[in-house]
Image (cartoon, rainbow, N blue to C red; front, side):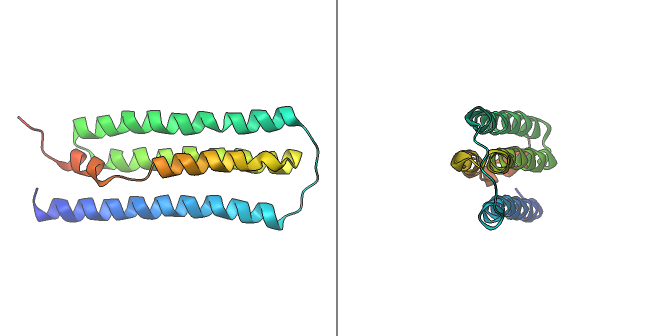
Length: 142
């Protein structure tokens, strides 16, 4: 691998880490909104369960879609697909936090934090790996 590829990989990796950190901060800002904005309690345990349980779907999809796109990026030697895979996985994990936010404002339930925990867990597991960029940039082995 020459130095131009190394610079490109490092720059792309830095962008991915910055985006990952930005999504983490947006999830934390949702928590700040919950603390600052008062809400009325409208108990609806079914809706709470539905919204928090639904948060598992996009997080699970984030792993599946990321793996498919990473495999394509390595096969096609396209590092732009690596960025797409990670950005998509970050956004899907953030959906779980948005569902937790909805739960809080619709029901006033104190179990809204489950959506945030699911989102946080998904984001931690989707932390960008430099290896995926290196796999997409490396020349095919013959």
